[in-house]
Amino acid sequence: MQPPRIRHVPTYSKSAGDDATALAATAGLRLDPWQQLVLRDALGEREDGNWTSPQVGLLVARQNGKSAVLEARALAGLFLFDEPLIVYSAHRFKTASEVFKRIKAMVEGSPVLMDRVKQIRTGSGGESIELKNGNRLIFIARSNSSGRGLSVDTLLLDEAQELSDIELSAILPTMSARPNPQVWYTGTVPGPDDRNSEVWTNVRDKGRTGDDAYLAWLEWSAGEDIGDLDDQARWAQSNPALGLRVTNEFIEANEYGVLPDDSFARERLSIWPSGSNAGIFGSAWDECLQAGSTITGPVALGVAVSLHREYGAICAAGRNAEGRIHLEVVEYRRGTSWLADRVAELAATHNASVVIDGRGPASSLIDPLDSMGVRVTTAATSDAVTAAANIYDLVQNEGIAHLGHLDLDAAVLGARKRDVGDRWAFGRKTSIADISPLEAASLAAWDVNNLADIDVLATINF
Image (cartoon, rainbow, N blue to C red):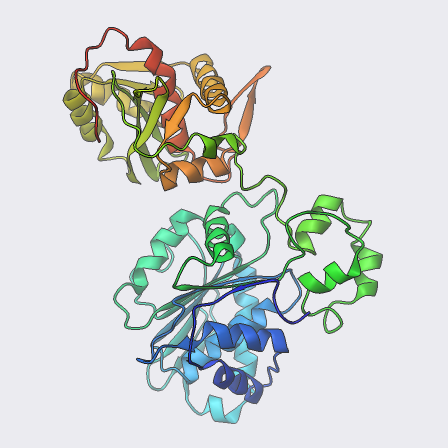
């Protein structure tokens, strides 16, 4: 099936997609109808010539030809749209290298295109194509610092299911000063080992609702439920290249009945695992959303640092007017150098207690805070386990009130458990997102019961 199951695209009156398709054909890349549709929707233009979709999301199963769409977009940016810098980025160096080799072969095979080329660099890790007018197309494997220092017009983020927020934070600001930037997210449904899927999941959620006026979302999938995996109509619905690159015979002989059902549903039908959007608390977390809730009693501050110390989080907890434990992310930002001073400031302002996991990355803050006169409760491993159980039970029984903070929601969505004897705690290494906001929240909620003797006379607003 060539049309996608889900297609939410900002309205456009004209498109450069057909021009991009024609250019690809001159380079020997002939696109399927569905690939042409993606380019047409993605390259819709406003009356002023800017893209109607500064963001593009494409979800389609492997081996359908997703990379060819990106190759056509890269060629168009380089040779048609006069974009000074296009960056193709993948999680794996091998993927970036393979795409470079294919584009290089197409350019070298076209005398018209090759006549405009100044040089093609092929050094490992430095692959690029530069035109005589200075336009460049470069290929990079992602890292926490990749892209810094560049000024990017078009950013092609392949393998988006493995794109971490740290990597995105490193490269996305490179586009902020460009006159008509565009970023593409292309990927497949995350697997159990894809621990950095929160960015991709957020793009998917926005794309499916169609509420983002700047995002074009096109999704080929077989629906939300596993259902009948042997229904070949569903195979066709989720694989637009069925009969072109992928055959029913191959799927029958090598995938269906060979792969476990959940793997087949994920890899071939692009079905997200059941419940993956509910997070560790299930739907109960959303039921605890209480806009307008505030703390009306003593305050506890939970402090946590991400596994590799990229981010720090401070979460406040205290009883609200209904007696629920109100949770609020007060600060969540990059680095740790700011944390001690900010915690000390908040503790003094709100007469708040502070709790930190004594075995976690934030434990390095305990001595500095102590020297600043801040009273710190050091949580042992058994306390962290109790804190996890405490917040879990509170959420299930609507004993929590939260404000829907995006970073806390993302931590809840990506959190996974780690076994501690016959009990469990939140696992920094097993989770698929930075869970420091959730860790901070659980510690603060655990400490609230110790605050009865602290006097607070007014509603707390952070």
